[in-house]
Amino acid sequence: MRLATLNDGSRDGMLAVVSEDRKRYTSAGGVAGTLQAALDDWKNVGPRLRELSVRLDIGQVDGRPFDPMQCLAPLPRAYQFADASAYVNHMELVRRGRGAEMPASYWTDPLIYQGSSDSFLAPHAPIRMPAEALDLDSGFGLDFEAEVAVITDDVPMGVSADEALSHIKFLALLNDITLRHLVPGEVAKGFGFFQSKPPSSFAPLVVTPDALGPAWHDGKLNGRLLVSVNTRLFGDLDSGLDMTFDFGQLIAHAARTRPLSAGTIIGSGTVSNRDKDGGSARPISWGGKGYACIAEMRMMETVSHGHPDTRFLTEGDVVRIELKDAQERSVFGLIEQRVQRA
Image 1: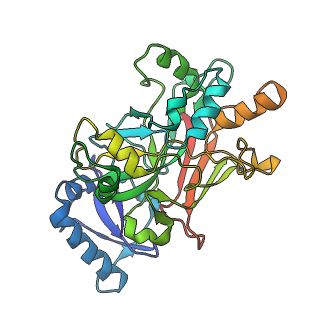
Image 2: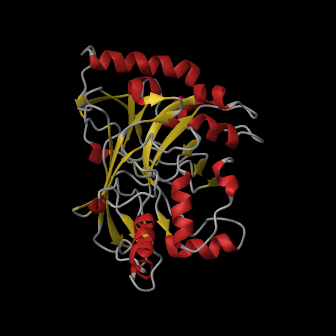
């Protein structure tokens, strides 16, 4: 089953069921007006949404043309967004890039922070930043981070990693926008990210685990993650490869001392692959898989020849993020955002 939230002028949008071929939709308003409302009563609402989805796919329900440009984020705002760093290779690279040593515990204990969840950007909404953020010499270091995420129902405190998987109702694709030059100062204060993490954006669709087939296995989603900036292919990665902690482990870690409310979003952190020989990831131009963020690229350039050549984002740049399945079909639809001056 695939759901989207259409822009109907309201803050939380209108929930829609989208056909398997991603070409048609029907309003889910007779069952649940919003995705959050559906998750709040999933035991009763879930089966009714599935029935509506089947009827749409077999033609018993007249669908309307589905236009991703009319979509908001599937959850335009959420009670909680907890973002992890499940691809520890990413943490190793970015910390090396800023001269910070990585604790060995990062490989055995998941790292999660509380992200901004009061608003999320639509898949084609611009990334708006103040002028001071976009200056290439003294700006904030605007970066993207391509991630997979899951959305849960109510998760009890102390849930096991295996039990946690049953609480995943949807998977999603997101762009976790990061202001790299603000990160070191905030982290040094000991309280973590705030100003360095503006609202993230989401692809149009959320998809139930059963609709993903064999691509969803052991709490990981295998797919071809394509990332580009303007006309440059930046990354061609495998979202299931080199994921140190699966989503069951991430949810269990988040719920160790607290229950998680229905509608909680757990992000995977930046997808990051190592090269086939086990070494650090290399740029596509060097025969590697590339990257899902600029910071990793800059780190590799610095290691290679002493300084980074790739700049961070500035006004007019366009970021594209998409995940494709084994049949080269877009799983969640496209994130495509242009950077604008606020």
